Image (tube, rainbow, N blue to C red; front, side, top):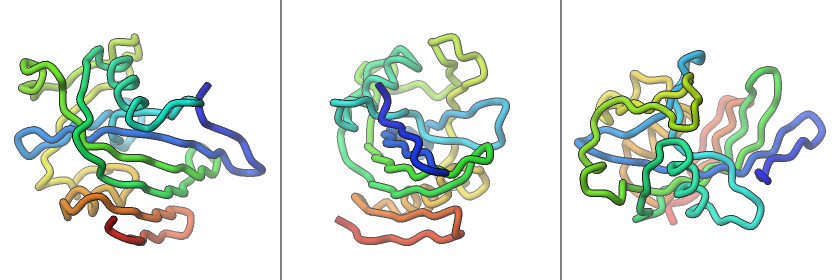
Length: 166
């Protein structure tokens, strides 16, 4: 069961995602019906830690095994989507493909679960500000390259604040 809960006018999500960095590019996923990019991952399940979540989600979505080799950030993320307010706790891990051959992937990949609307694209870190990558504070976190960090990103109030580099 996913750690997502409706509370009053909010939806609470606990989410974990992975950052793949290859040839100064990061792997993102995009719903072709939406105008933004996100990092691959998903909701944490009850009894599951965020590292296991990232491994499970990548295996489910891409059919690939990964290794988690660092911690990047915790983001307290507040936003609105489809007329619903979200309060999201977002764990971000540095990851890479476990298989040596997979580490050389530089092409757009497709979801193996049959979700044809999802594709996985590499975007250039030097051009990260040209993309609608959400949450917006990811651009600063990844550009600064100083980890781990704790951020509060409040799209509802249009604020973003670094709490501390851990």
